Image (cartoon, rainbow, N blue to C red):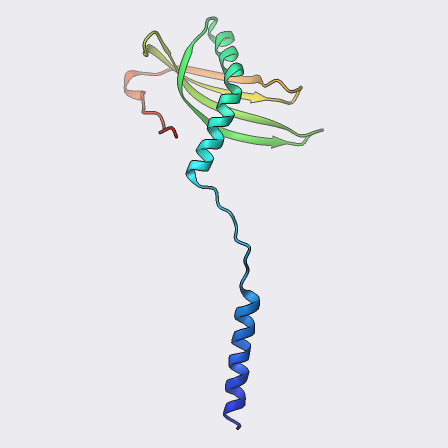
Length: 136
């Protein structure tokens, strides 16, 4: 009996620990496809603002491709708004030179419209042209 009691206690302890330590709640991790889908939606919503910012920056309409979200910042001063930094490549004609790498930060701080608050560009050399990320 002295040997059985510790064994029963051990089995019951293990059973309780197993039963109460298991949780049906699992942390959801975002997949690469979900993140890319989210970024594609944001880029589609920003399209009019991107077009306008490029036209103002270059003094004429520019075509672009390889759009990607670099950063999303949530601000809470004095109220909630967002800054979204986008990077893209512009081109002339039928995907001809010059190619410019453009980084634009948009904000919705002053209302519902997304406004460019910062824009930087530089002309790419032929050896700097890279492939775009795969789209969904």
